[in-house]
Length: 465
Ligand code: FIX
Ligand code: ZN
Image 1 (tube, helix red, strand yellow):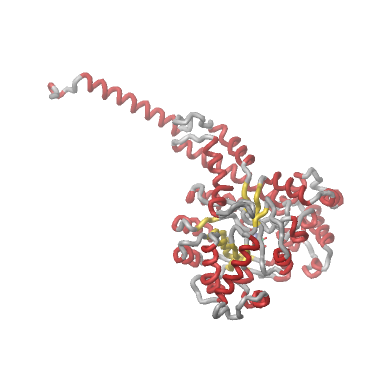
Image 2 (cartoon, protein in one colour):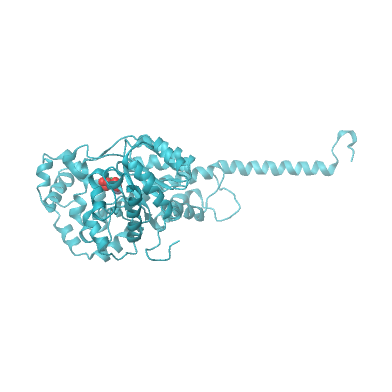
């Protein structure tokens, strides 16, 4: 239809006016949206900005987390499982802090009984000083969780409380208070005390999973190869000949025995790959193939400098910045392997995020050890959300003493509540409202389903994939 005198026919003008009005309305809505006022969106049960924090806190508090790395043991492992006030106080994090605030020499300290060591640490860090460090605050939080005094001059009341607990019931209660289940142990087949339990046959436990730890094989072969030889595996000091195949046979035997959910190793800051070392040869010829065969991820914890001060024993380890090109080479050259990775140096965190964007067979997890301090957890987690969305595992507890899961997961929930609330506020401001369902999905993914997608966390003995 020809336009007379260039004018638009009335009908079309009306349409255009309507379109303009809608567009203006759209802008208004967009403006309203951009000013963070009530966001408008399709699914209706959006939450108001003022409700974001309380909803996030509630979802974090009511979502049970998986703890993918601990040094806890199921009750069947007897004394290997540490719990109670004396173990809480003689945690190597606190021992390191004790030696800074006490004149007691390490030699003198190691000559004391566990009880006397705990008394010395309580007196020095909790009575003579204010327990402001992350680790000392942790003990205070555990005492408070059990309604025990947190400022007592001695440990009498705490000791009698823990003495009265029965381990099975105590574990159930502690995991409930911490909101975690299951937890993954750290199981070393070359630790003589622990190996004895496995070799004698051990009942599985609904809340504990195993992880096959390989530090002695991959990092200290020269010290430990004879244990394998002693168990009938045809290996030698140089790991030559059929040693690779024999180590693979060793791993297969322990896979059947332990049913681990992953294999794991901690690696020094000097770790390089590929480089001609016995450890790397066993990694390539035995561990990575075994992980592929059993469809297990390999956990790499990179950046420890072992025993920089041996007189402090477990408290004597430190960290170093690692060259993560080793990880780049592993992820690229072994695409059929999956790598669960945590790095110990703050300077390596950003690189790890970038590598995770390059390799989908790489899953960053946790703020390991010296990174597990709220200010650093906040920094690392914000960076990861900005660069990886919800495709990572934010935290593990690394608990060595049972009750530590209470404060370590409480700290994590407290830190994540702040970060997630702010992230959702930004999302809302940017133009998309948030529902409780969205938050539940994200929290479940971060603290549960990412892990479940990477490892078979069902109770041992249940039908495995
Ligand atoms: O290698 C590891 O699993 C480390 O977590 C431990 O060796 C370390 O001693 C620790 O307890 C860290 O929290
Ligand atoms: Zn650990």
